[in-house]
Length: 209
Image (cartoon, rainbow, N blue to C red; front, side, top):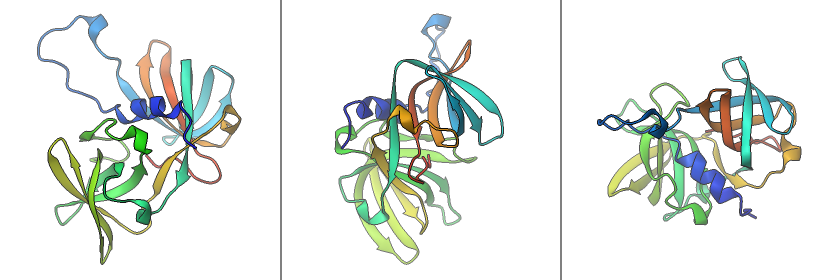
């Protein structure tokens, strides 16, 4: 079901964590473009430009790069998360000192290891994104707690009831209709936002990341 274009999309989507600039001076042309995330609803799609009304209420034009990739998300369930799965979990620190999930993305098996690590995320203030392998999944009183591992480290994340859980699904340009919800990992360019990947919601499922 996963098209061959999807791995390229996921590599871009999961590797958008901003990295610290090197301490040594670098030439301007060597610096990576600033990464931004566009979240919102489609206003218009015209081939190479996607106009989006963002969650902040601003209307922006996103230029689609040559060879850009498209995918959607499909509903999954907490019970679909199994030991050995590779997941991306956006979370917030909780009062008990652990982390509570805001959303969970279950990667296709071919994408295991993409963007592995834990880093700051902008879904909500103080949120983080952890791309890691599920070590175990234990049903708790208040939902499910997963232990994930990445780069030799472990992290426990609680997944409260009602947390969106999705996986990647195919999409076509026909899905880019007005009102459809999108998540776009893009980069700042002279002309505005430039995107190589778009994740679109369909059939009532929206990209929660």
